[in-house]
Length: 388
Image (cartoon, rainbow, N blue to C red; front, top):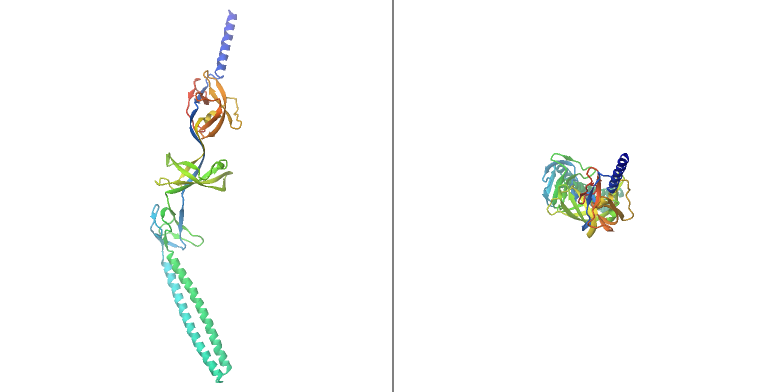
């Protein structure tokens, strides 16, 4: 009797071992799977950037003083030549009056010097005639000659003073005119840096009072592209982007420039790609962060699988890849995993193109394994990158 009990126990043990082996060695294992699909796909390069107007003009002041009036504010529409601010002109008006007085005085001094020169020339002519008939001594003629030459020099000095004071007078009038700040272009005020009563100093550099965007219907994105991806980005390339303000809307742009200057931040090298954007409805605003995707390749009717399928490996197995060759695992009907070698093409990030290999649309490729289930598999659609 004991002999039969031992034989029965061994038979049960063997049957259990075979059952475990047939189910991959883990009775509690379950797999999320997805079927390959056919459709159009595109390979993209993603990055971020900020929106800016295509042309922005900073309006400053060339004179120092106190802001007396403001005629424009944020979002104000302005035209070229429109007065947008005024600096208190009192000191500049006083300077104009002062320099004008100095200029008039210099002109009077010039007129006085010319009169003295005319008198000296008459005296010199008379003394020459008197000296010719011996009426006066040579010394008197020499004195008249010196007086005439001195008068000529004084006329020249007075003329120079007139020019100097004329320049000071003109400068004072220009500075007075600069107390009126006008818009140099047609556009929209996107930034105002001063308030009424604030003092601005233009001693070393021109302070910025307003920033005016010439045309908000045309924007551009300065996108920072990783050095590993910049080779795929070219001028004229189509791009798409989203902003946080409108997460469900995709905007379109076009690459107008790929800059050669590298930008290094924390040992990460990026390059700037400029994307031109139409903004006719004015939804996009300067400074918004844009999540940009550059379409670098596309396929029609491609056989594609979720990217997670190529990253899955059964426990204890390492990832293997040779060139564009990869391996996916297909879940068989009896619950076993069958490796399938495939050649991959472009990737959209969440999906990968299968160019060739023993994979069909009816197969169920494994995305990941879960030990919480009861041994059943679950079909999953394409999942985003790193979403498993």
